Amino acid sequence: MKKKSVKTLFVGPFSPPFTGDGVKNSCLKEGFESLGAKDFIWFDSICRKGNRFLHLLQLIPLMCKSRQIILSLNREGRFFTIWLFFLIRIFFQKKAALYVVGGTFDLQLMDMPVFNRRLYINAINKLDGIFAESAALKKGLENLGIKNVEIVYNPRKDSGDKWQLTNENSGKVLFISRVTEVKGVTVLMDAFESLAGDDSDLTLDIYGPVDEGYHDYFVKRVNASKGKIKYCGMIDPLEVQSVLVNYHFLALPTFHFGEGLPGILVEAGMAGTPIVITRFNALPEYFEDEKSALFVEPQDVSDLQNAMGKLLKNPDLSETLSDGIQKVAEPFRVEMVIEQSLDLFRGYGWNIITEGDGY
Image (cartoon, rainbow, N blue to C red):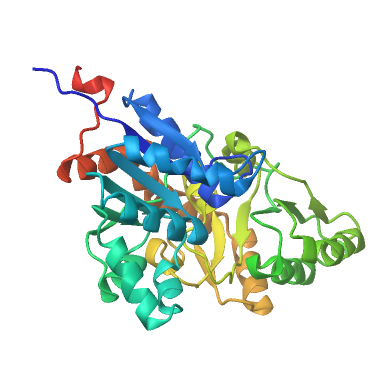
């Protein structure tokens, strides 16, 4: 007897803009659709036009008619939709799960007043599952009394482009992320200029959206670099991996408070591009120093300069890091994340039918 499909509502922002949560959700959407998942409703939480409040009100009838609800949002979006789900489930039988975007959900909860936090955690525990991107976040949430926490990695699609160290990309350094102080851009430019000197052939290319408050300083630094540092604008997410293979390594010396596992590091793993990153938040959970990444201390210009110099002088180390990071990225492949997600949903008693089920 054929199973009857029920409606599944997916709520979250989609790209563009190409933010971490938007890229993640677009990747999840593509993954579910590639398996022919039936009766999905995709609600983009970004208001593209009109009134934002009226846009969000559209969630109420959608949640009421959907038996299963997947939430994948950042801090403000989580708060609104979890409480909305909590109220609706009083009147209707619903199931829901949350993909946590970012790595500091536990710290955000700790910042709440105690009474408010207890109420919010009670609402969160009505969800069937909480999908954290790291073991550190899982532990932090469980320590606060949140149940049903699972590790589900931030998915990325492998385009097939693979890194090799060549004469063409040797000495070319890459940064891809939000261009701002806390992502380590100033530290990187300082370390690069100290390393490059006036006669070096080294170059640093920077991609990503520039924060408004950082723009003038950043432009001044780029203009003063005599062409060694270039701002290359935004990058199409579909082209990231093909860009990564054209560089010696990616440097991301972030010390952003809300940093989880930046998607660009997963994409570097898909490509096999070596990385230089900070020993910060959950990053050491994923990578091993001199095996799959070179670690530096946050905001330490000298440490970053030495690490980049070490990698530039040692082709064998570059090859080792390339092999190591590809192994790290394996469980982040969108196919594996979707398969794990479906197993979890079905374990919760959800009814999600795909073309592979033969229905």
